[in-house]
Image (cartoon, rainbow, N blue to C red; front, side, top):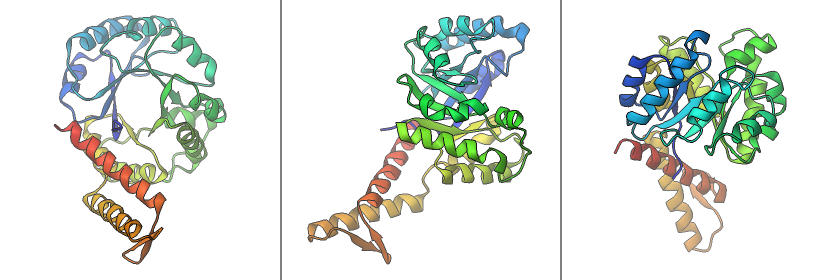
Length: 281
């Protein structure tokens, strides 16, 4: 059963109250952020604070991902050394991944799976090689940084970053990696968030990164199979099984053809629904 990543919430590693509250939030995964969310003068203290929380606090079934600082900063290697072999960490998220060299450097200091922040133009161009890295487990779109670097303007349809989103999505799927969409900056705009989640879901993303707990319910709902989708999946599987039992290669359900590829999709829907239900147990 594949772990769901509908909602991936950034938590500043320097904020003790946020670290405490995170244990009760309905996030599928938490990114404990040592990079953008922490001021330079707080980096060392934040590392110590986060290490203490991850050693002492039970975050339940949530995936625990630590975003370290880059190795081109004074803090990156110390971050990797601190969390690279810690039992309470599921993966390290490497910022601004331009190519495989930075993943190789981090991999040398940890036995954890790696995730890559995809947020630079060069990273977009090297997405296929990055996705193919043997230690990579997932990719996270950094749409704010990408938009800034390429000079695109904000649009509700995200036209400016759509090429990067699609390219990374193809790379991730080619290698069987998890990939989650970038953040939606207006955390009080539920309708805008919902629209962007629907867009990301329909493109094929596994979930969305979030900047505020208020965004969790929307992301969790949009990226989960609906009751109608689960019911249809079961009917498709049953119809195809009945057709095969009678010697037919395809089935017809509600006036539409059902063949092997539809059954595979239906089975994926049911597996996703089961994995989500398991989180609530």
